[in-house]
Length: 69
Image (cartoon, rainbow, N blue to C red):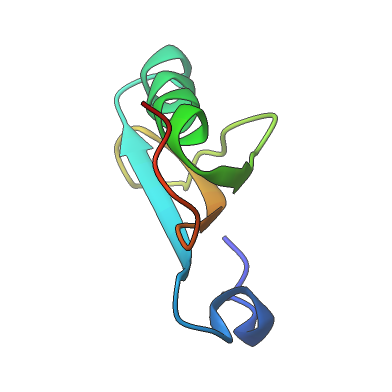
């Protein structure tokens, strides 16, 4: 994965989340769960790192807003 860009964590309340899961469906389900609670810039696909188990994705959260009920 690319290095994290400083602008994605430039202010309190901004976060970068890397999900590592056994398969695409699990990783995307975790991302969807996060997106239902906070403003999220989502990934449209996962990646595989040679020699490492599972799949990865990165999403960007803004947790400064109130949680949805």
